Image (tube, rainbow, N blue to C red; front, side, top):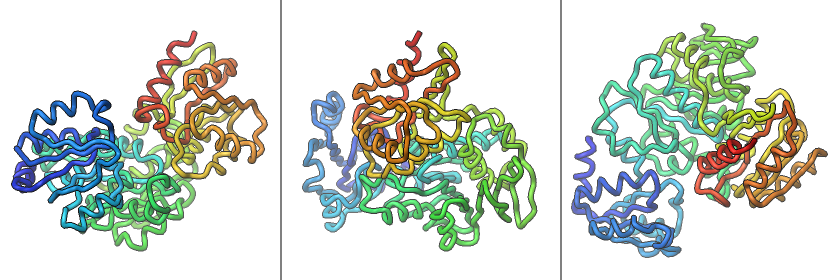
Length: 456
């Protein structure tokens, strides 16, 4: 089905779009351009949405805003923004009344003319997605990157060719209602995350599993053998499973052995490159590359894999070196919105760092983070709503270094800078979402970079 055919199939139906965010904005334009009877619902106030509401109303769109935006949904088709949970009572009632619940991403799966490769997991999704795309580009492929990484692709589907490849980062929220799956997928790892949104850990795990539940045949599923949950996925993932591991040799997939990354097929192994030649630091990045290699082995050359690993400079906001001031290096790891991500970031540095952490709670415990703070942090600066919880986890673990709490984000960064001496590293790695002070992790990271660039 083409995009035009898909849009035509909605004509004569009552369509509702839930959430006027990044992923749904191009969708709304497509629907209005096709004269679809459209209602847009958003939790934000009319004042916050501002001119966007005026434009929608001028184009004949019905708009419902505010805290009751999910009340009395009357629709044939509902497009859900990823952050709006499908079990919300208003949505559940509409579905019970006969509405079809879908999303911009699910529509893209229906109309995409080329192969789709998808990545999910608790940590490492963005880097792994980007690495896969860079390797494919190095192999000469035309690549379209999107999904949870922030670029909607639905409105671009008609410009894609069958020879292209779409590489998608998919969140648990996007996967919850997915009824189709990519031909190749990677699950980086699964650990407690987003438990402020998901009803329980089982719901979160099942959402991740859904990335391969509807896979066509033949299929490739790359799974982290070092993670208990992802390793267990192999029982239901079919015959196309490829494992990757930093601990053990695997017969089909990719692994680290003696400081070198290998790919393997049916027990036959080939070296790709030494781990020390990977440009971006940290064992977690070795893991990211192993996942990508396992997924792409046989589809691209080893030379394309190795060249990418040696030249790719990393994803913005992921252990990104901002600048060095008076011998102090400042790193932006704002994308680390969970304790496990921050733990991986801390372990990327040989010496103890000055850590800036804190933000909005995701319902995930901080006790394991406390242990890493004790081992890898020389001074701890806390800010945001979770400051007290992280402080308790650190002190319970035995952390005895300087501990500073500042509610204001800029004051926290300046306090970390004042604590730093020549040779130190200051790392922003919040272990929490940004929504207590910022609209997303990118705004938080950019704010950090602006403050650091103003240091003298």
